[in-house]
Length: 385
Image (spheres, one colour):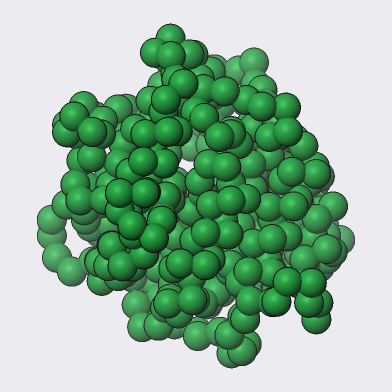
Protein backbone atom coordinates (compact mmCIF):
# COMPACT_ATOMS: atom_id res chain seq x y z
CA UNK A 1 0.00 0.00 0.00
CA UNK A 2 1.32 3.41 -0.98
CA UNK A 3 -0.07 5.79 1.62
CA UNK A 4 -3.08 7.14 3.50
CA UNK A 5 -6.47 6.12 2.19
CA UNK A 6 -8.21 9.26 0.95
CA UNK A 7 -11.97 9.47 1.36
CA UNK A 8 -14.45 11.65 -0.47
CA UNK A 9 -16.47 12.42 2.69
CA UNK A 10 -13.58 12.11 5.12
CA UNK A 11 -14.99 14.54 7.68
CA UNK A 12 -18.56 13.28 7.49
CA UNK A 13 -19.79 12.30 10.93
CA UNK A 14 -21.77 9.09 10.90
CA UNK A 15 -22.50 6.65 8.11
CA UNK A 16 -25.16 5.90 5.53
CA UNK A 17 -27.07 2.89 6.86
CA UNK A 18 -29.04 1.16 4.12
CA UNK A 19 -31.19 -1.93 3.68
CA UNK A 20 -32.01 -4.19 0.70
CA UNK A 21 -35.20 -4.71 -1.31
CA UNK A 22 -35.34 -8.35 -2.55
CA UNK A 23 -36.86 -7.69 -5.97
CA UNK A 24 -34.67 -10.50 -7.40
CA UNK A 25 -35.94 -13.32 -5.17
CA UNK A 26 -33.55 -14.44 -2.42
CA UNK A 27 -35.92 -13.88 0.51
CA UNK A 28 -36.37 -16.96 2.67
CA UNK A 29 -36.35 -18.58 6.11
CA UNK A 30 -33.94 -21.31 4.97
CA UNK A 31 -31.20 -20.82 2.38
CA UNK A 32 -31.81 -23.04 -0.63
CA UNK A 33 -35.60 -22.84 -0.31
CA UNK A 34 -37.95 -20.32 -1.90
CA UNK A 35 -41.36 -20.19 -0.19
CA UNK A 36 -44.09 -18.67 -2.34
CA UNK A 37 -44.72 -15.84 0.11
CA UNK A 38 -41.11 -14.67 -0.30
CA UNK A 39 -40.80 -14.91 -4.09
CA UNK A 40 -39.99 -11.71 -5.93
CA UNK A 41 -43.20 -9.70 -5.81
CA UNK A 42 -44.34 -6.12 -5.54
CA UNK A 43 -46.16 -6.83 -2.28
CA UNK A 44 -43.19 -8.34 -0.42
CA UNK A 45 -40.44 -6.07 -1.73
CA UNK A 46 -42.40 -2.83 -1.36
CA UNK A 47 -43.43 -3.76 2.18
CA UNK A 48 -39.77 -4.23 3.14
CA UNK A 49 -38.76 -0.97 1.47
CA UNK A 50 -41.50 1.07 3.12
CA UNK A 51 -40.74 -0.50 6.49
CA UNK A 52 -37.07 0.50 6.13
CA UNK A 53 -38.24 4.02 5.28
CA UNK A 54 -40.30 4.32 8.45
CA UNK A 55 -37.59 2.76 10.65
CA UNK A 56 -35.04 5.42 9.67
CA UNK A 57 -32.74 3.68 7.18
CA UNK A 58 -31.09 6.22 4.88
CA UNK A 59 -31.03 4.28 1.59
CA UNK A 60 -32.14 0.96 0.12
CA UNK A 61 -30.61 -1.07 -2.69
CA UNK A 62 -32.98 -2.19 -5.44
CA UNK A 63 -30.93 -4.80 -7.38
CA UNK A 64 -31.12 -6.09 -10.95
CA UNK A 65 -31.44 -9.64 -12.28
CA UNK A 66 -33.18 -10.83 -15.44
CA UNK A 67 -33.72 -14.47 -14.43
CA UNK A 68 -35.52 -14.03 -11.12
CA UNK A 69 -36.30 -10.36 -10.73
CA UNK A 70 -38.78 -7.60 -11.29
CA UNK A 71 -37.70 -4.70 -13.47
CA UNK A 72 -35.70 -2.36 -11.27
CA UNK A 73 -36.65 1.00 -12.77
CA UNK A 74 -40.35 0.10 -12.91
CA UNK A 75 -40.28 -0.97 -9.28
CA UNK A 76 -38.40 2.14 -8.14
CA UNK A 77 -40.70 4.46 -10.05
CA UNK A 78 -43.80 2.82 -8.54
CA UNK A 79 -42.59 2.86 -4.96
CA UNK A 80 -40.95 6.30 -5.07
CA UNK A 81 -44.06 8.42 -4.35
CA UNK A 82 -44.96 6.13 -1.42
CA UNK A 83 -41.70 6.87 0.42
CA UNK A 84 -41.19 9.69 2.90
CA UNK A 85 -37.52 10.02 3.77
CA UNK A 86 -35.39 7.17 2.45
CA UNK A 87 -33.13 7.38 -0.62
CA UNK A 88 -33.48 4.71 -3.31
CA UNK A 89 -30.37 3.04 -4.78
CA UNK A 90 -31.48 1.75 -8.19
CA UNK A 91 -29.24 -0.78 -9.94
CA UNK A 92 -28.70 0.09 -13.60
CA UNK A 93 -27.28 -2.62 -15.87
CA UNK A 94 -25.36 -0.57 -18.42
CA UNK A 95 -26.37 -1.33 -22.00
CA UNK A 96 -29.92 -2.47 -21.22
CA UNK A 97 -31.47 0.88 -22.14
CA UNK A 98 -30.38 3.33 -24.83
CA UNK A 99 -28.33 5.84 -22.77
CA UNK A 100 -30.29 9.03 -23.63
CA UNK A 101 -33.52 7.23 -22.74
CA UNK A 102 -31.89 5.95 -19.55
CA UNK A 103 -30.83 9.51 -18.68
CA UNK A 104 -34.43 10.63 -19.14
CA UNK A 105 -35.81 7.76 -17.02
CA UNK A 106 -33.36 8.48 -14.20
CA UNK A 107 -34.13 12.21 -14.34
CA UNK A 108 -37.87 11.47 -14.20
CA UNK A 109 -37.53 9.30 -11.10
CA UNK A 110 -35.16 11.81 -9.51
CA UNK A 111 -37.88 14.46 -9.80
CA UNK A 112 -40.48 12.07 -8.33
CA UNK A 113 -38.15 11.52 -5.35
CA UNK A 114 -37.12 15.19 -5.18
CA UNK A 115 -33.44 14.25 -5.25
CA UNK A 116 -33.56 11.06 -3.15
CA UNK A 117 -32.32 8.87 -6.03
CA UNK A 118 -28.91 7.20 -6.15
CA UNK A 119 -27.65 4.84 -8.87
CA UNK A 120 -25.74 1.55 -8.62
CA UNK A 121 -23.76 1.09 -11.85
CA UNK A 122 -23.75 -2.57 -12.95
CA UNK A 123 -21.44 -3.89 -15.70
CA UNK A 124 -22.47 -7.55 -15.79
CA UNK A 125 -23.37 -9.23 -19.06
CA UNK A 126 -26.83 -8.61 -20.42
CA UNK A 127 -29.08 -11.67 -20.65
CA UNK A 128 -28.09 -13.77 -23.63
CA UNK A 129 -24.77 -11.97 -24.24
CA UNK A 130 -21.18 -12.74 -23.33
CA UNK A 131 -18.84 -9.74 -23.54
CA UNK A 132 -15.39 -9.94 -22.00
CA UNK A 133 -14.70 -7.90 -18.87
CA UNK A 134 -12.80 -4.98 -20.51
CA UNK A 135 -15.59 -4.56 -23.08
CA UNK A 136 -18.30 -4.55 -20.43
CA UNK A 137 -16.53 -1.87 -18.43
CA UNK A 138 -15.88 0.16 -21.58
CA UNK A 139 -19.60 0.06 -22.33
CA UNK A 140 -20.34 1.24 -18.79
CA UNK A 141 -17.79 4.05 -19.14
CA UNK A 142 -19.54 5.23 -22.30
CA UNK A 143 -22.98 5.03 -20.67
CA UNK A 144 -21.78 7.09 -17.70
CA UNK A 145 -20.23 9.70 -19.99
CA UNK A 146 -23.49 10.03 -21.91
CA UNK A 147 -25.52 10.26 -18.68
CA UNK A 148 -23.30 13.02 -17.36
CA UNK A 149 -23.47 14.95 -20.62
CA UNK A 150 -27.26 14.61 -20.64
CA UNK A 151 -27.54 15.82 -17.05
CA UNK A 152 -25.05 18.70 -17.17
CA UNK A 153 -24.79 19.96 -20.78
CA UNK A 154 -27.12 21.33 -23.42
CA UNK A 155 -26.12 18.61 -25.87
CA UNK A 156 -25.10 14.98 -25.86
CA UNK A 157 -22.15 14.69 -28.23
CA UNK A 158 -20.39 11.37 -27.79
CA UNK A 159 -18.58 8.90 -30.03
CA UNK A 160 -17.13 5.68 -28.63
CA UNK A 161 -16.86 1.95 -29.26
CA UNK A 162 -20.51 1.27 -28.43
CA UNK A 163 -22.33 4.57 -28.93
CA UNK A 164 -22.25 7.43 -31.45
CA UNK A 165 -24.82 9.99 -30.31
CA UNK A 166 -25.43 13.66 -30.98
CA UNK A 167 -28.70 15.26 -29.84
CA UNK A 168 -30.08 17.97 -27.50
CA UNK A 169 -30.28 17.05 -23.81
CA UNK A 170 -32.97 19.50 -22.69
CA UNK A 171 -35.61 16.89 -21.71
CA UNK A 172 -33.38 14.93 -19.31
CA UNK A 173 -32.20 17.31 -16.58
CA UNK A 174 -32.46 15.65 -13.12
CA UNK A 175 -33.74 17.19 -9.91
CA UNK A 176 -30.20 17.02 -8.51
CA UNK A 177 -28.56 19.80 -10.49
CA UNK A 178 -25.01 19.27 -9.26
CA UNK A 179 -24.16 16.50 -11.69
CA UNK A 180 -27.11 14.21 -11.08
CA UNK A 181 -27.53 11.29 -8.64
CA UNK A 182 -24.53 9.79 -6.83
CA UNK A 183 -23.06 6.79 -8.65
CA UNK A 184 -22.29 3.68 -6.58
CA UNK A 185 -20.08 1.00 -8.13
CA UNK A 186 -18.74 -2.44 -7.27
CA UNK A 187 -15.99 -4.20 -9.20
CA UNK A 188 -12.57 -5.72 -8.61
CA UNK A 189 -10.91 -6.14 -11.99
CA UNK A 190 -8.39 -3.46 -13.06
CA UNK A 191 -10.83 -2.17 -15.68
CA UNK A 192 -13.58 -1.89 -13.07
CA UNK A 193 -11.37 -0.15 -10.52
CA UNK A 194 -10.27 2.33 -13.16
CA UNK A 195 -13.87 3.07 -14.17
CA UNK A 196 -14.93 3.75 -10.58
CA UNK A 197 -11.86 5.87 -9.89
CA UNK A 198 -12.59 8.09 -12.87
CA UNK A 199 -16.37 8.44 -12.75
CA UNK A 200 -18.14 7.09 -9.65
CA UNK A 201 -18.72 8.41 -6.14
CA UNK A 202 -19.00 5.34 -3.89
CA UNK A 203 -16.94 2.16 -4.19
CA UNK A 204 -18.99 -0.77 -2.90
CA UNK A 205 -17.15 -3.82 -1.56
CA UNK A 206 -18.38 -7.25 -0.59
CA UNK A 207 -17.42 -8.60 2.83
CA UNK A 208 -13.83 -9.70 3.37
CA UNK A 209 -11.39 -9.71 6.25
CA UNK A 210 -10.44 -6.24 7.42
CA UNK A 211 -6.87 -6.43 6.05
CA UNK A 212 -8.19 -7.41 2.61
CA UNK A 213 -10.78 -4.62 2.70
CA UNK A 214 -7.98 -2.21 3.56
CA UNK A 215 -6.01 -3.36 0.52
CA UNK A 216 -9.02 -2.82 -1.75
CA UNK A 217 -9.58 0.66 -0.32
CA UNK A 218 -5.95 1.65 -0.69
CA UNK A 219 -5.86 0.44 -4.27
CA UNK A 220 -8.99 2.42 -5.14
CA UNK A 221 -7.75 5.51 -3.28
CA UNK A 222 -4.49 5.44 -5.22
CA UNK A 223 -6.26 4.95 -8.56
CA UNK A 224 -8.75 7.78 -7.88
CA UNK A 225 -5.84 10.08 -6.99
CA UNK A 226 -4.48 9.54 -10.51
CA UNK A 227 -7.64 11.25 -11.76
CA UNK A 228 -7.45 13.98 -9.12
CA UNK A 229 -10.48 12.48 -7.34
CA UNK A 230 -11.54 10.76 -4.15
CA UNK A 231 -14.37 8.28 -3.58
CA UNK A 232 -16.38 7.14 -0.60
CA UNK A 233 -16.28 3.49 0.45
CA UNK A 234 -19.25 1.23 1.08
CA UNK A 235 -19.74 -2.33 2.36
CA UNK A 236 -22.53 -4.62 1.18
CA UNK A 237 -22.99 -7.33 3.84
CA UNK A 238 -25.68 -9.49 5.45
CA UNK A 239 -26.71 -9.08 9.07
CA UNK A 240 -27.75 -11.43 11.89
CA UNK A 241 -28.09 -9.60 15.22
CA UNK A 242 -29.74 -11.03 18.33
CA UNK A 243 -29.74 -10.18 22.02
CA UNK A 244 -26.98 -12.76 22.59
CA UNK A 245 -24.20 -14.10 20.38
CA UNK A 246 -25.46 -17.62 21.02
CA UNK A 247 -28.88 -16.73 19.60
CA UNK A 248 -27.30 -15.09 16.55
CA UNK A 249 -25.13 -18.12 15.83
CA UNK A 250 -28.13 -20.41 16.30
CA UNK A 251 -30.04 -18.45 13.65
CA UNK A 252 -27.09 -18.74 11.28
CA UNK A 253 -27.08 -22.52 11.73
CA UNK A 254 -30.85 -22.63 11.19
CA UNK A 255 -30.52 -20.73 7.92
CA UNK A 256 -28.20 -23.42 6.57
CA UNK A 257 -30.02 -26.42 8.02
CA UNK A 258 -31.92 -27.36 4.85
CA UNK A 259 -29.32 -26.48 2.22
CA UNK A 260 -28.15 -29.32 -0.04
CA UNK A 261 -24.69 -28.98 -1.59
CA UNK A 262 -25.90 -29.31 -5.17
CA UNK A 263 -28.71 -26.83 -4.62
CA UNK A 264 -26.25 -24.29 -3.26
CA UNK A 265 -24.01 -24.75 -6.30
CA UNK A 266 -26.97 -24.28 -8.66
CA UNK A 267 -27.94 -21.01 -6.95
CA UNK A 268 -24.38 -19.68 -7.05
CA UNK A 269 -23.84 -20.50 -10.72
CA UNK A 270 -27.04 -19.12 -12.21
CA UNK A 271 -26.14 -15.45 -11.64
CA UNK A 272 -24.82 -13.40 -14.57
CA UNK A 273 -21.76 -12.46 -12.48
CA UNK A 274 -21.06 -15.99 -11.22
CA UNK A 275 -17.64 -16.14 -12.90
CA UNK A 276 -16.48 -12.67 -11.89
CA UNK A 277 -13.30 -11.97 -9.93
CA UNK A 278 -15.34 -10.58 -7.03
CA UNK A 279 -17.30 -13.82 -6.71
CA UNK A 280 -14.04 -15.81 -6.73
CA UNK A 281 -12.78 -13.66 -3.83
CA UNK A 282 -15.88 -14.60 -1.83
CA UNK A 283 -15.11 -18.27 -2.48
CA UNK A 284 -11.52 -17.76 -1.32
CA UNK A 285 -12.81 -16.30 1.93
CA UNK A 286 -15.02 -19.32 2.57
CA UNK A 287 -12.03 -21.59 1.98
CA UNK A 288 -9.98 -19.96 4.76
CA UNK A 289 -12.80 -19.79 7.33
CA UNK A 290 -12.97 -22.04 10.40
CA UNK A 291 -15.17 -25.11 10.79
CA UNK A 292 -18.13 -22.93 11.77
CA UNK A 293 -17.67 -20.66 8.76
CA UNK A 294 -16.14 -17.69 10.59
CA UNK A 295 -13.18 -16.03 8.87
CA UNK A 296 -12.63 -13.42 11.62
CA UNK A 297 -14.59 -12.50 14.77
CA UNK A 298 -18.31 -12.10 13.95
CA UNK A 299 -17.75 -12.41 10.17
CA UNK A 300 -19.54 -15.56 8.97
CA UNK A 301 -19.11 -16.88 5.42
CA UNK A 302 -21.82 -19.55 5.40
CA UNK A 303 -24.28 -17.50 3.37
CA UNK A 304 -21.93 -17.66 0.38
CA UNK A 305 -22.64 -21.38 0.09
CA UNK A 306 -26.12 -20.51 -1.20
CA UNK A 307 -25.72 -17.35 -3.22
CA UNK A 308 -23.44 -15.65 -5.72
CA UNK A 309 -21.96 -12.29 -4.84
CA UNK A 310 -22.15 -10.94 -1.30
CA UNK A 311 -21.47 -14.10 0.68
CA UNK A 312 -20.94 -13.26 4.35
CA UNK A 313 -22.79 -11.85 7.34
CA UNK A 314 -22.02 -10.07 10.56
CA UNK A 315 -23.26 -12.37 13.33
CA UNK A 316 -23.40 -11.36 16.97
CA UNK A 317 -25.06 -9.42 19.77
CA UNK A 318 -25.75 -5.67 19.48
CA UNK A 319 -22.53 -4.60 21.17
CA UNK A 320 -20.42 -6.88 18.97
CA UNK A 321 -22.12 -5.56 15.83
CA UNK A 322 -21.67 -1.95 16.94
CA UNK A 323 -17.98 -2.49 17.63
CA UNK A 324 -17.50 -4.11 14.23
CA UNK A 325 -19.28 -1.26 12.45
CA UNK A 326 -17.23 1.34 14.32
CA UNK A 327 -14.06 -0.49 13.29
CA UNK A 328 -15.19 -0.38 9.66
CA UNK A 329 -15.95 3.33 10.00
CA UNK A 330 -12.50 3.92 11.47
CA UNK A 331 -11.07 2.34 8.30
CA UNK A 332 -12.95 4.91 6.23
CA UNK A 333 -16.16 3.07 5.27
CA UNK A 334 -19.03 5.56 5.06
CA UNK A 335 -21.84 3.48 3.59
CA UNK A 336 -23.32 0.13 4.66
CA UNK A 337 -25.93 -1.90 2.77
CA UNK A 338 -27.36 -4.63 5.00
CA UNK A 339 -29.78 -7.48 4.38
CA UNK A 340 -30.87 -10.64 6.19
CA UNK A 341 -33.13 -13.66 6.05
CA UNK A 342 -36.02 -13.17 6.04
CA UNK A 343 -35.47 -9.56 5.03
CA UNK A 344 -38.39 -7.91 6.83
CA UNK A 345 -37.64 -9.62 10.14
CA UNK A 346 -33.95 -8.77 10.04
CA UNK A 347 -34.66 -5.19 8.94
CA UNK A 348 -36.79 -4.75 12.06
CA UNK A 349 -34.32 -6.50 14.38
CA UNK A 350 -31.36 -4.38 13.26
CA UNK A 351 -33.47 -1.25 13.64
CA UNK A 352 -34.39 -2.35 17.17
CA UNK A 353 -30.98 -3.45 18.43
CA UNK A 354 -28.38 -1.38 16.55
CA UNK A 355 -29.74 1.47 14.45
CA UNK A 356 -30.67 3.74 17.42
CA UNK A 357 -27.02 3.67 18.52
CA UNK A 358 -25.64 4.87 15.17
CA UNK A 359 -25.45 8.37 13.75
CA UNK A 360 -26.89 8.04 10.27
CA UNK A 361 -26.40 10.41 7.36
CA UNK A 362 -26.97 10.61 3.63
CA UNK A 363 -23.80 10.87 1.61
CA UNK A 364 -23.30 14.41 0.28
CA UNK A 365 -23.67 15.04 -3.42
CA UNK A 366 -20.62 17.29 -3.55
CA UNK A 367 -17.20 16.48 -2.15
CA UNK A 368 -16.88 17.90 1.33
CA UNK A 369 -20.51 19.13 1.52
CA UNK A 370 -22.31 17.98 4.65
CA UNK A 371 -26.07 17.49 4.21
CA UNK A 372 -27.97 20.35 5.83
CA UNK A 373 -31.24 18.47 6.24
CA UNK A 374 -32.23 17.54 9.81
CA UNK A 375 -31.50 13.98 10.92
CA UNK A 376 -34.01 11.32 9.98
CA UNK A 377 -36.10 9.93 12.83
CA UNK A 378 -37.93 6.61 12.97
CA UNK A 379 -41.72 6.86 12.93
CA UNK A 380 -43.87 5.19 15.55
CA UNK A 381 -46.08 2.34 14.39
CA UNK A 382 -48.95 3.75 12.36
CA UNK A 383 -47.60 7.31 12.40
CA UNK A 384 -47.23 9.27 9.17
CA UNK A 385 -45.68 12.66 8.46
